[in-house]
Every structure is written in structure tokens, then in C-alpha cells.
Image (tube, rainbow, N blue to C red; front, side, top):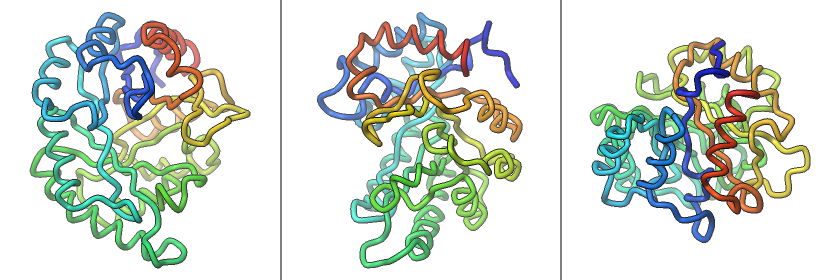
Length: 280
């Protein structure tokens, strides 16, 4: 397992950690401010959200690289299934944005169950079909797609994939090299089968997301913990992820409306470095 105590260059910031993914939260820093602050602290990369990029994908990507950082990824496609599913054109546009930004990975949060269906089978069939169709466009644009399984509490309205095993099943059915998974501590920390399941994920791990699960979380979406403040066994999870061959950037993604989004971004970025070196 990699030693981060003296080297935090594998650290990446997901800008949601500063509240940039939801209106009305965070300090409102521009992409340029985030880039400069991360570069000054020795971060290795940044993951942006589509809403921040707009029509400036190429410009922002170039700015990141000029600062000596990597664009680690882009969040995210519109939902592929469920009541709020995006159109094919909207999904293609997110792939095109990732390509223009120079993001190697575009994250997929699937969306919830298909209207008029019960259980999960029909939703997963629909998901498999849509992923397969858009994976080709992504490959043509040199973009990898990462299915992100979510904690089961998000079943119904946000996802039909609850475990890494679920996500790998879709990858196997579609069977293209640019489709893989993202493992997020918030969503998998509870899964005792994770180490065994990840043995089948070699070559499919496109992202690893860091945060923590608070013992008394107050909001299922907007109360994630800073690494070390919760009950997730962060080093055991990373050991399993790296044991499956992952050696990429570790992306800190913390949705925290009442705590971290109210703090100074400079303070948050400094604390992330300290926690990354000591508890991750």
C-alpha cells in the first residue's frame, strides 16, 4: 500500500468538497481560484462538476495543466435511468465536456428505478442498454465511464446499483474496456464483501473517492464526514482498492452543508492535506 505520510501528490480535490455542486453553498470560488489554491498546496489533481465548466472546458483544462495538476475527472453524466433521466443528447454533451476538459474519467450516477417498474431487473436492463450505447461515443472521445454504486439508502430515486458487485455486473455485460467503476468510501464502507469483490475488479477501477461516514449523520446526502471524523476503516478500504491494482489519484469528495461548506476553503484544503497524510 502506498505511503502518503511524506507524499500527498496522489491527492485530488473534488470541488463538491467546497460546496460547488449545489446552489447557495460554499464560498463561490472560481475554477481559477481552486486551481491556484490546490497547486500551492501540492495537490495532484482536481475533479470538477459540469455546472462549473459551462462552455469553458478546454480553457479550464489548460489552466489546470499549466498549474502542474491533472484533471482527474468530471462529475457527472445526467441520470441514465429513472424519472429524472437525461436525454441522449444531454449524456453525449457531458462526454464531450469531459473530452474538451481533458478529463480521463466521467462518473456515472445511474438514476433511480424506471417509472412503472417494480424491483430492479427492468431498471438494470435499461441501464445496461444506455451505458452500452454511450460507451462507444465515450471511447471515440478517449473518455472512460465510471459507474458509481451508491449506499442502499439512495435506492429508488438516485441509483439501482448498491454494491461494487452490482456495478461490475454491468461492466461484464457491456464488456468494453472504457467502462469501469468508481469506489466511494461513503457508499461502500459498510460492505463486508468489498475486499473479496474487488479481486474481480482488476482493470475496472477508474476512481477512488475519500470521505468518512459520521456515526450520527444528520442528512443522508449533505452530511459526509472529513476523513478521520467517522467510523469507516479508510486504510482497510484503500488496501483492498490498491490490492486490485488501483494506483491513481485519491479524490476527496465531501458533501457537508452544515460543517465543511461553511468553513474557509483555505482551511478546508489545509485540513484535507493533513488528514490525507495521517488517516487515509
